[in-house]
Length: 587
Image (cartoon, rainbow, N blue to C red; front, side, top):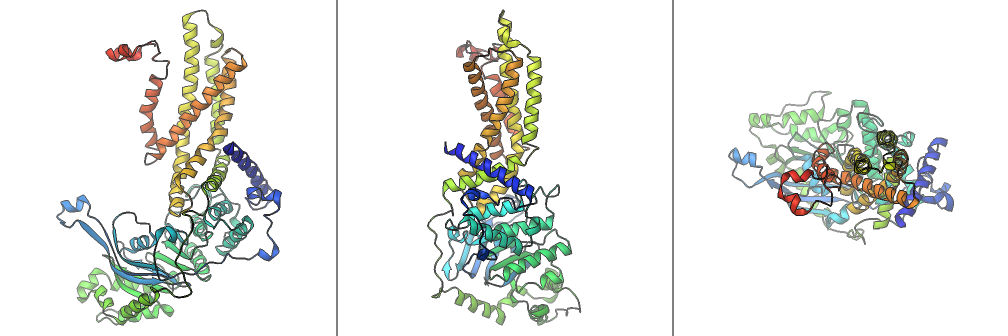
């Protein structure tokens, strides 16, 4: 009953959302029945309000990271059991400061960020990581941090505004009311310059919907509506042209100006992008730091540090400091100059200053307290399910390639099967007539079931990629999403069953008895549901929706064979197993 109530509630919300889009309002304005209660109205005093947050400093000292040596490398003669990717990395990320992690490919910049953000589930991590002076606890740290992945993965059939409402709903504390959430979402959209795109569908990358630069800003906004204190961004300008990259970096700078701690990995940035950063952590291949400190105006402090090394060529006027530092610190230059830049940094006064800074910031003060939350997730299990069901309903409603096409297909197939099996149900004179009637019902249910199982696999595959990001962000556990994906299929399969069953039953001229017709629809409904859920399961246990049908095909064959028509109950087990020829008994 609870699931049915939620489905009806979400359906009404869905209609109201679509009405808002038609009349020009933001989608989701009447979200969660606040239209009727009036509690959702945004007071004029609340406009421009930003939820308060606690600024936090992240310090890390002597961080090392090891992974198991791959078998391929061991075959090449490497005897060590572990490969070290990070070597004694020390530094600090502070509020209101935009920090860049820069290095050549293989330097370990993304690895360092993943280790600090808690995204590395394997390997061995050594060293000290503190948040405002207290040891980092990943369960609580995930609640006050955001992570913008390099790949912008979002649900394609929801709008920009709905994506942000969904993230805020699941990640903001439960005591924040809906009106405040919506006001904060509007603030974030204005901050990242997404307000004109609030009603635009996200779409699929490279196919429809938002552009690459707009999707990147949406990725940032989805994390920002969680009101994080620390935000990690993995190459936010990757794949963007100069104009798009400038827009994204302007957005990032707007976020930094709110007092948050922002860390970005950058690969070969332009002059404008590079000079928008305040501080730099520069890494060489092998996971060692060769510079950690402020850039200075026009990167003057960075340039002074490396030009002080004997033999390093001076930077030319107007030359990109980022490109210059990558050139002068390359492994070839190290060989030519006979210098180890990592060792040079460790012997510098800058290293000592950073070490003292980290030591001072790693001690708690009177103004900070250790992070703690009463629960692992912001919302209860039931509220997580409600939010997931809300987004699933939007995704299904706006996915005609799946929902509308399968209804059209259901009508066509029902008429086709009904025509082929014309009046089979009214012919009962011979054994063959009974056999034909049974066969028609068996084939009709099996065909529709397999069609549903196959068509649902791409839909689940796309949402699964999105769920990986959402679960890593601590939005919900696996069960609420699974229940929502199951629950949303109930009404759609019910409509399919009513259409298919009524047309086929009528054309087949089966006995018009209320009990028999109801039983037919009942068993057909749950059989089609079973097939649909099986399609979801095969997608969940396989890498993608391309592999899923390959795994499912043998199961379809077994179901076809042992469904009770190809092999009837009259075949005794001993007869069935005595000879392979008896497997087709009953045909």
